[in-house]
Image 1: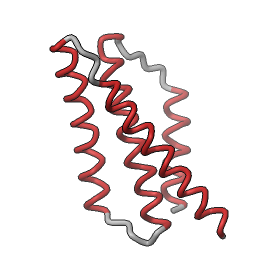
Image 2: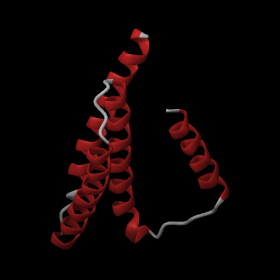
Image 3: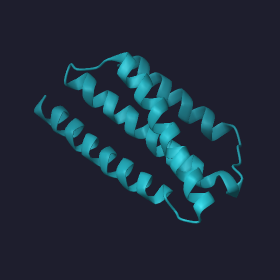
Image 4: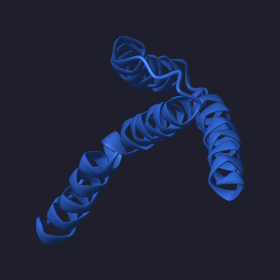
Length: 109
């Protein structure tokens, strides 16, 4: 668990130190990909706290969720419909649900 926290801190520091701009054309894709990744991370933390963590499930879920969210954003852009909002809604709800369960596990300790 501590290794994940150290990696997160290093990632945040590198993200703050390295200036990186994202073109506006890709902002929808990046937003849903980021939410999909956060959903997978919080789901992995929750599964770890419930002693139900499986690395294969985490990795496949991480990439399939991110890919599906990107495809939804792309298809919606081609159709002229903002389908990425559906992914934002679903991943947002799941992130807050996982966070609430993680909080309950921490408060029970």
